[in-house]
Image (cartoon, rainbow, N blue to C red):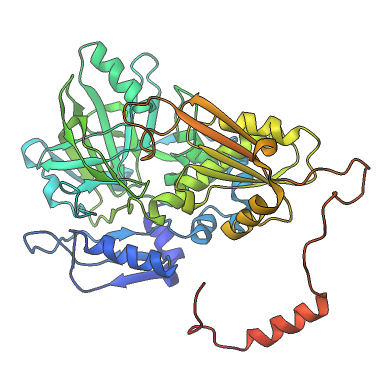
Length: 471
């Protein structure tokens, strides 16, 4: 049975356990930042999170759950993270419908707290950055439904905990959850919503699959699990909103009609503080949880949050380009480019094929720069990508720029008030040979003999390089 605990047991040798009291106010995030800077990405398990009043929470905190590409791929049963895009795309395109179970068999409803007993302040919610106005839920998977079709949607959206029973709820303006909320508000009705926290990465990443509207994420989760996802009716909303039975915590409530409050500024995935915005609120009616819950947090702007969503983007881009360009082998959305850049590797593309694929991928809302390269370029190396740009591109000949496209309005480079973005596609592949089965018309790359390379690898394998200077 897939859940967060199973995953932690599977990865017990990759967990950095902290038994000392650690403050929820920036100290856990500081640990993530230091590890990121060193290039280390263990799962972090804080046994004694401490709130601003000095009280130790009974609920431990886990973060960096998906900061490592290797651990995240392994969680999904994928041996090599470089194959993630293709396999994820295939699995989510083979959906398995969820199963519905009763409350007595649902661990997430072992403890039920309702109405005046609800207290969000007792959860170990982190304040991540020094300019954040307060503690934010960052791994809360918000589930709403379309009132016209009753089809649900799930997405990770931030919530600022303001009072014991109230928090902001910021669904991104272009999100499917915002569409659902607006439909309820247009009917003069509060929007029902449930936020669930903590599950196996197969479920976390299934809910990030990029789907059409309206379309439920539960079946995509089943595709990754290889079995039906176990759901249970929520306490407040019943069968209208189902929640994962094996999650850790669920927060249920309503977003009242047209009630907006200030939200932010907030440290976003871009690495910059996002501006203060007007946001709906959620009035919380019920909290359910396991008897011994674990609180999951995503480090906003850190690999912990970027890696899983970027890897899901790789699957989406792969599915877009593969039908246009059969030569596509791999896709990478690098952490260095936040969620704005994507690299695509091709094997012997035909004349015009890369251009066709560039036009298709530029339409994908989340990216603003797409670079296509040949199979000899390692797309998981920013250095290799820079080499391809430096030696295989003439900007006027090999780049395409398009204005007026949809993009992320959280991009800090966008002019204030702009509603669209400019995007660029770059063909950094070699010009194909005009004669079949002959090398491309470009000088060969510098190389050394294979036996010399083997000898060098053998020599260096026995040397301690821990104290060597870094580039």
